[in-house]
Amino acid sequence: MFHNSSRGLFAFLLMLLEWTKPGLSNPLRPICDLRVLKHFIEEARDAEAAMLACKEGHGLAEPVTVPQTKVDFNVWERKTALEQAQEVQSGLWLLNQAIGSLRTSVTNTALHSHIDNSLRNIFSIGQVLRSLNIQEYTPPAGGVAGGEETWRVSSASELLQVHVNFLRGKVHLLLSNAPICHQGSS
Image (cartoon, rainbow, N blue to C red; front, top):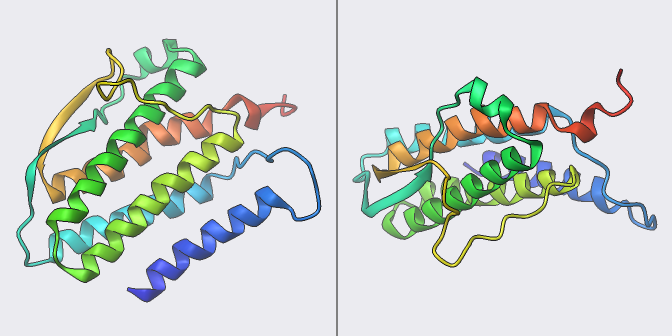
């Protein structure tokens, strides 16, 4: 348990040091290495496995809205980079809200550690996106912008499975095709 949280903290600190480069006033360097995302996916899987192994109830106090994880590649590729980024950012915002609400319905302290780590990782992914010049998502007054595909889940295991699938799918597609990561590699 401690090892997983320290691994996440270590990865976050490395990214933070890379961005800040004490003493230098350069803008953020883009983080294009997909091993960073792979690390976040592994930790999301660990959280899902811990939830499935837990004897505690897996229901949520009330169903939560999560992003659609299914990707129609033809539709995805027709979207602009900005539209793709907005879809990923709004999905991460939804996951942050949903996983945050999960924390209040779980009493197991070991699961709290996994949930807290998932929330930190969503924040870190936002920082990675920022390093790629992808604007932060500002939710509209009612939550998610119209047109975003969502659905509702009522169990913690479903929620954590959506988290893993969203990272493996849309977040991976966005990061692997980020224009800033392909500049000069013609």
